[in-house]
Length: 388
Ligand SMILES: Cc1ncc(COP(=O)(O)O)c(C=O)c1O
Image 1 (cartoon, helix red, strand yellow):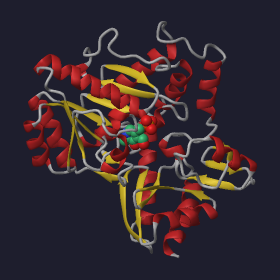
Image 2: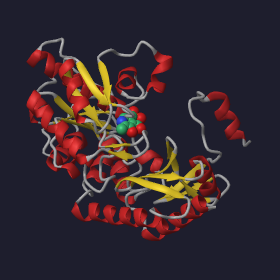
Image 3: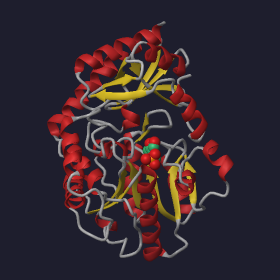
Image 4: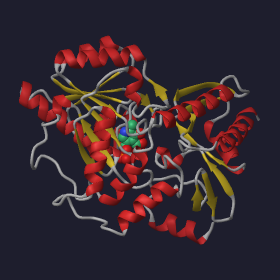
């Protein structure tokens, strides 16, 4: 064990099972370990570094802003915050944005919006938020309660009350639950990421959206992992032709700096009023400047290139030796392998490719602009890992 590993193990909380690699630098889709080894990054810091490491456009935006003002609090106006909110609204048709610092916070904000909206429209007892089984919405006590996976709940009771879970892709079950509970909101990921990279059925998504409209229930789409170009659309819900009331996002929005956002549609744009919500760091000008440099580049041509890279990954892996199935959307890919996923990931790491897992699958979330040559090389190594 290196000295750094020993210090980390001694002083950092034991919440992460780290791989035995110390990353010291990176450039684009390549990462470098302290031993000088080069890795192709097929994880992007779990869907965060959208344009890779050290991306010159992002770096310039962030460092320029750092040289101007790094933090002001939300007591004052700053240009990057306003500009980012405008860009996000223009690209989605949403009306207003609340900025926080993470995906969990974005979801907390969305839940507050749904509860306040329902309380004002229907009465305070309309507070239940329905989410899907196998979902993941964050680690705070409220977003853990929203997360539809029991094993995350066990050690942290009592969780925030007012959540109910229903199976994905079973509209009748969801409808029955929503009518039986006094339902404020329905929250779901379009592709369940931590749950194993599983896209929801298009019919189910459309039925839920129509039902929310009919019943005046707040529809929240959690785009923390799927958002900001990851699936080949600006947001994954756009593949399904629906219009959510709230879209939450984080991760890839900042390109590597912490930022989360809850985007509010027309129905709920004025639900949050003065004093209803806040965040010291939310809307931080440096994070927002970085995010502007990301969002500005997510145009039709760029999204088409994400789709093309995705097709390359899917067609190379589907039917490959040792691969049982390939799931996901865009550059959010789950590989069901004959071998245990962790063995595939270990082989890949040894051969210079960093992959992730999700449940029992190998998960790929490469930078959205990964060069084709690197992507091809990584795919070959992943295929070899699956086959051997
Ligand atoms: C769909 C989804 N929602 C929420 C979160 C929580 O985000 P954060 O870790 O930024 O709080 C995650 C993180 O993996 C996620 O994938």
